Length: 95
Image (cartoon, rainbow, N blue to C red; front, side, top):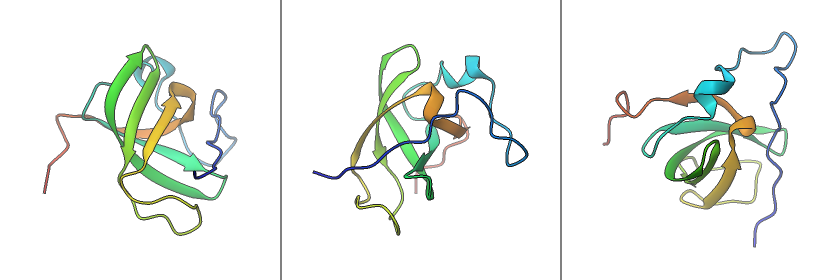
């Protein structure tokens, strides 16, 4: 089983990037993509496959990791505080 730590962005990081509003991060829906930071090293996209409760999600890794011991398609459980960016479902284009 892979071990990783997700970055906690309850408070925005100083002078590095802007976070979406907390209310938006808490209300994403299935099909959206959320960008998470793994092990303070790698930013990757996760497709939300299940909304467990408000601000609590399950998803599928949509990148091929370089620094983190995971594979594309890995099951990821995360919360709103881990999300640094998102792509709304109405913008997502399946290829």
